[in-house]
Image (cartoon, rainbow over all chains, first blue to last red):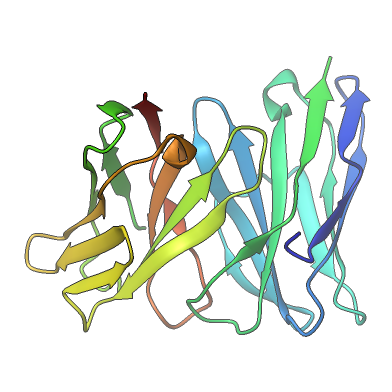
Length: 113
Length: 113
């Protein structure tokens, strides 16, 4: 158990819909990351937050948004969903904002029908 | 941005043999290179990492080497065991501006009895 909690574990929805994925980092970790893992593209970095502020941004679509709240949990919002958004979304956390070990959650599997 | 290439995509070895996975990166400013192991249906977990001021690092049966001039780094697993079967991801990032880890596409390692 990494100490990172993600909900929901599984989510099935339809195209055009909006979903919210939630992540609670390990106790004491200030950084939260979101990654998308699909079969043909490996682990794609979406975004990093550190202590409530956006710290680094990857190739995150405009239809996607995220935030980190004062209690350090984070939410990833995915809107106008397309079939291609079906993937496993991982949240990870770390102590600092810089390079170091990431502790991944179990992931949220999103299926868009 | 950073681009990480990883080879081979699949690797099959006999139990007890060694396995080598190679990665190249594009940004010469990258200075942190972790390796993650992901078992089937599980979350990625860090197995070893190396920073650019070190050429080699070893942890029991696992070692990583870094060639900054050639911009490549490798994972070496000796005396492979069935429990080493998993997908291995290399990654690279640079300090400053957050921790934007760029992952390789993964190597499916199968250790056969």
